[in-house]
Image (cartoon, rainbow, N blue to C red; front, side):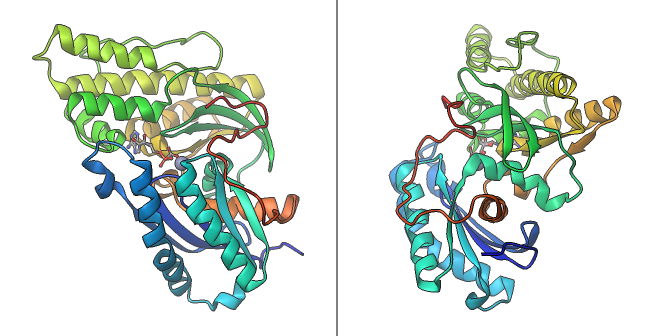
Length: 341
Ligand code: KG4
Ligand code: ZN
């Protein structure tokens, strides 16, 4: 199959709590992108409940795919391939998308492409910035992952560092829950911090000058210990000081990674890349260093299917279709042999 700028890929994403479908032409032209969030369903539990997620994906997926096709204004016979997240993620949630994607590929007689969700996050920037030049440093910060990746070319990644315990988004979610700021935690802390003083409390910056790995579980414990010692402390000050500590470490290590690999710029990916402080501090640091800062729009940072279709287009071109007996993988490293989380 010839894969070129006219190849239209339907992307499907169901790895966690967003049911999403999108049409992307030529790997970077988003024709339509529909995201149905389950946030309200999980909010009352304060976190994603896997069984609830699977059932909600089952109900939403067909209408979401139909809407992506209608909003794209195309006939389904125009679709050249179906790409879907096969991992990492919640197994039940993944299976809903993977089964549907295979069924559609069979029915339409087009290739099925299994996509790594983490690789897809790297591609979110390319959808909005077609002029990116390698080598790039990607800071991928989501609810499940925190990693620094050197991207040398499409499909050519080198893991520079990752968290040794909690992911950055996980720390945001846990601290927000502890402070009773609401769900999901990242946006809640982002909002609360507006009213707080980021210098009010000096939380630790773990492993600051210690390689390119991260650690966030000690910071979370420091927040808990601080609030226990001083129960009347202003929670917006705690939120702002916590956020500042996370962002300081992320920006410091990302800039160090840039120097180590001689990158032309930094690409942000993952849900935490929607964080306002992180975006402004990364931009300022990149400006000062004379390199590019590529920040996907907030909608592209969080889970969506346009990034799946884009990554699927690149995979189809480089490796070809995936077998229809391909499974779903709850854990799946970005780079073979490199992933613990
Ligand atoms: O990439 P994503 O949508 O799902 C995963 O693949 O994990 O990321 C979700 C994570 C959650 O932990 C959420 O709290 C965090 O991204 N997040 C944020 C913000 N928006 C979402 N963290 C900090 N600030 C934000 N504005
Ligand atoms: Zn994600």
